[in-house]
Image (cartoon, rainbow, N blue to C red; front, side, top):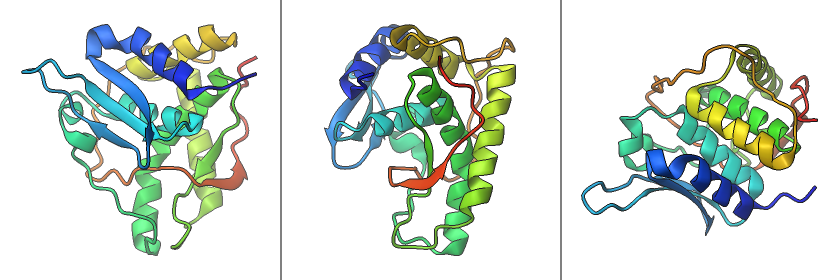
Length: 203
């Protein structure tokens, strides 16, 4: 199966643009979210790294986590601690990355793409990789069972239709949630060596 990030851009526009005036676009050295400008009609932009398929899915996951207030702010109003974090900073990074990476795992399953947790700290303390992978897996399985937030469910449904996979999400109600963490050290790339297991495959 061919996985092209440009297909994700088109699917995202078809799924979300009319309601959320947001586009997904690649070709950048670093991912970033740029809030839209209602005054000029400029759409919000989710920018991902180069043509990386996983980067696109990861950035959509962050957008699905961010609530309405956060989506009015560049990079959702959070700071990003760059590579080279010490143990304390990395522990906080991993804490707030559980939810977006759990959604990303479901997105990957919906389009038959391998998923691995991202520690994103090659030049610093990697943290407890096994615990982080277990936390991501547990939350992904919970979201699969009871249903993800509304926008994440719409995105999973779009991926499922496009890639011909079976329905992944549980029948529980989809809900919008405002992100509660004060920091958003954004997971960028650099997959770890631990694969996430236990998420039902897309086919």
